[in-house]
Image 1 (cartoon, one colour):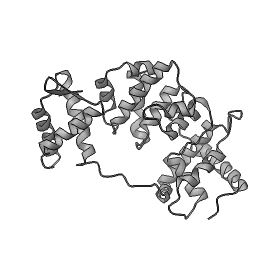
Image 2: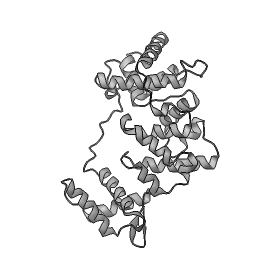
Image 3: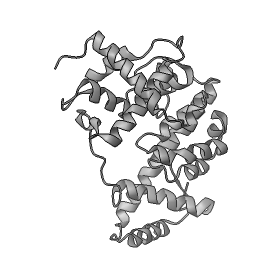
Image 4: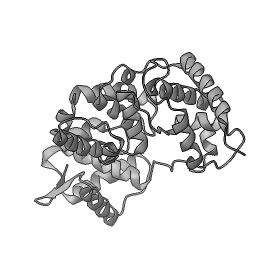
Length: 288
């Protein structure tokens, strides 16, 4: 199928803006233009439902109210505050990026500077730019993708992002001169319409070529990594001997009705976590 014409794109923009007004969600992170606070929300919302982020975002900002506060916090504190959000790597990447930003002396506004920071990809950078600075960009995340696929590629399967990205760029307003149709308003409209579509029709994002079902978490390698981080956080500064770490992990596995974990696997996961900066072995004991 041919890509939409300019006339079709203009009609699409009109529909999306109207739907955005109808479906607008007054979310806490939409009441600020602080790039740090918006960045934290963007990271938390990756593969995480809005209802889980609302509350956790506020708690994070109370504990780490600024880039500088996060940059100088202890790793244990950062990981502790992140527990329950999933993907602990995000928390460490947030802190490492905060340390770089603190060194720069101000929050970057340039797309290239943003994507050079740990854990910030093109979509996250575009989201920060749109919502904090009203700057145009290609913000292609799951809800945005759902709207473009539903409206402009109805019935098509396996649509690649390379077909969507030029359309996302072409439809994004270039400046903030019109407060009712600026990059911030435009992407909020796409996000809210996309979230509504996912609740009311078969998820259009499944027709994306890059769509993949998330693998099962319980019993997975990822679940055991997360459990080990929780165990070490609970142990505090005293840490645990390797045998104690394995024993506590197997207690958690048994409580969940799973078989014991091989000691070699526990050792391997600890080595992974250590290499990634989650924990360290000191005087024969493992600690965060």
